[in-house]
Amino acid sequence: MSPELISILVLVVVFVIATTRSVNMGALAFAAAFGVGTLVADLDADGIFAGFPGDLFVVLVGVTYLFAIARANGTTDWLVHAAVRLVRGRVALIPWVMFALTGALTAIGAVSPAAVAIVAPIALSFATRYAISPLLMGTMVVHGAQAGGFSPISIYGSIVNGIVEREGLPGSEVTLFLASLIANLLIASVLFVLFGGQKLWARGSVTPDDDGAAGKGSEPAGAGADAGTGTGTGTDTGTDAGGTSTGAGGSAPTAVAVRPDQDTDGTGAGLRLTPARIATLAALVALVVAVLGFDLDAGLTAVSLAVVLSTAWPDDSRRAVGEIAWSTVLLICGVLTYVGVLEEMGTITWAGEGVGGIGVPLLAAVLLCYIGAIVSAFASSVGIMGALIPLAVPFLAQGEIGAVGMVAALAVSATVVDVSPFSTNGALVLAAAQEADRERFFRQLMVYGGIVVAVVPALAWLVLVVPGFG
Image (tube, rainbow, N blue to C red; front, side, top):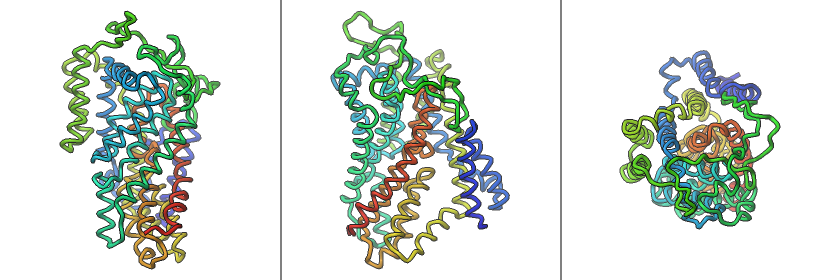
């Protein structure tokens, strides 16, 4: 048995154990990286740790720390109220606002994870307060980021168009952009219908102080679900297994305690701005400006801003350290470290070259789309496209496959799967979820990500490759 095949089988075993036993998948992946890296790939510790995602570790810690402070001092409550006023109380419009916002950020040049890191915590806070499905809100944020991700001036678009030019392939910047935009818009529309969008429309308008248009003291959305079996994240919440709520549409909203500084005089003014909240809002704006305007690292910037707020208001920030999504950090970093071992030992290249050698161009095309989707669910989307597009050059040169359609299909296949909880965007959305719902949310993202990996590459191939565009 080849080392590459052994490494893939070990990954399958990791998934099986994590989904059948309550063991953190990241911890299992670290152990697998050590075993496979040492015994199969002959790597030393430095070679194994070369795949550790240090930048993502800092992003997850920094962003969840900063927004934990924002939750502790009521800033996210204030932002939710402001969002309700912005859409005149139509809660059903909020998921689309988040979709459009992340899409606009990536279209004008923001890195996709940076846009998701900025928007996801606000979106998930809103979902919790108004009993919107976290899966709906989180996936709308990620698909919004990918919808704008291939504009001609975006990071993804510039990189892919550069690869196409370097390889001497025919290209179309507009086709690439529209393919991703339309694909993600269609997926978002389906998700909106399936996960409670119609019920949200049926609610009509709410006021910012409605707390989800239901009475105080109701059970948090999804709290009755079994969060203690088979998720692999290793944080058993011990909730009742009998719950069946999906958290979508008409499920019970989260109870929100009335803070001492909340305006409850019936005027609808909502939460007041305190010095701590003003400073936190300034920090969030500074995060956006630093990341989008000056291309600073989102994680390091968020940690620095969180430290400043912690120094000024230590009481609010003391609880925030414990609310950093540590189990998610372990989960994501462990899995990506193992993926780094796979890359180091050549498993991904081995699989891609095997597909590239198939003598049937259309079959090779669909298999490359699936490889891009599967690997991208755990690794860098752009990195995978950078590896797969050159592998497609030999059979594209035969003229039987349109280069424009093939590149667009690879781009769509490799990025829509970023909803996976093991990808950067999916991890950020998972980390932004409420602790009580994170186990269940992880399972939902796993299932949804699997469906996307199974379905979207085939559809992209059918629509973009088979007709022979370009």
